[in-house]
Length: 337
Length: 257
Image (tube, rainbow over all chains, first blue to last red; front, side, top):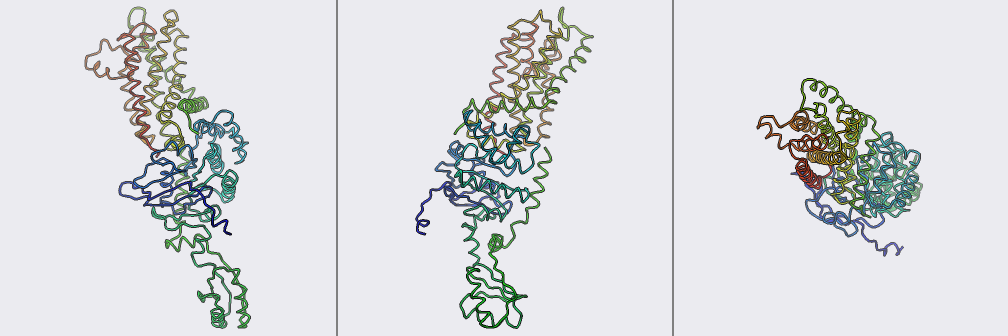
């Protein structure tokens, strides 16, 4: 236990008071956070929250209005070349050359990153295997599906062995099956190749499945930063829902109160809701209280709060509002080519 | 790991050439239009006039048509930059740890090579079918002409990149290019000699970079020129250097869309 507590980890990214204004609009508003070496860090928020702008600043594409950002000690605004050499990035919008083959895209990338011929060939073979694109490597990218393009981009993003990999909405617009496979690749990269990963997403499940820590961002500000579990715990714990007949409810509530299981008990249409720190641990006690008062319980469910609940609790709105519109726009962009 | 400037130039050169060779339409299309000009305009107008004793009108415009081929194909290199901006590949280049000059020089090298391929095909054809008689052509003349062609191409590729760096959509780029390309072509002396035109027209033509290129090529290939060939070479070199430099500055300032 104390091993976890005393473990000191270096920071991969340090951001302090970072701000970006476009004219009168503040896209990113004095955000500060650290990304630890070796972790998967998520920026979670709706479209337009400032996630991509943040990534653009950290990856040297645009300059900041004020504040600072360091990648492994290198200033993202004054030591651009050093930063560029230590990062890999998968942009939200596709950035492949459609006329070239998959292998040619990787080869071009390797040359731009100064990889010698032999090493380049070896690495290309390896990353193509990893994202399962060996069979398609000789075909022009314009014939690839959305998921294949994304996999190729991820392969390209880490083939030069960056210390940090930026993934901007890595699975946007992909079907659930492809999304899950991409999660596996991302997870493997982090665990097996020890790449620190910072990703943006507006998919709750994605942040939950992948991230060690999550910064919830809205209107250019970080409103909460913690591990997925602690974010969910911040809502006060699990919800135990009991189906109980009307006449037994008051007696059962009093009994649970007396047993000091929880003070947060609410009567609902079908029974009672009890908020407890840990649903699994509290359930036996609740059932004992029901037996002691001879109240029949029809059913009992334990529900962990989701990140969606956390987001709604923090911002008063759902995160997915704009997801459909953005997907449509992206489809349009792709068709224009 | 960092990319060297030569490695960057080679990587981006390879990309342009691969894309060109893969597109059969572009390879064929590049040669079609100049041949049409020679066959119709050259033969048609040529039936009315002679330039001087021993030099037919076809002889005269052949270097001009090579110049035209270079002008059109080179300046449209800017289109690729706009595609790169719209479809994101520009970002891949901008986040690469490479010298910024390598990006612009690689683009210029690649696009210049591509437009040189079609122009050289036309030049060889023009000599092969005897429009420019082989007896008239000297080795040094051919070398000088090719140097001239390279400088014309690099200049207009750079101009195309400069315009593309300022504009984010294909439509806007095409409007500007169409506005530029015809005056540059007509005032270059590709179709008629500039010796006898009124002074006002000659004055305007003096600022046309292509004029010196076409004049130098003509001097090198058929021995007729308004200015001495070495002067054409010098002026073209200065124009090219200036445009490459401006393109470099513009690319450094450009941020990904």
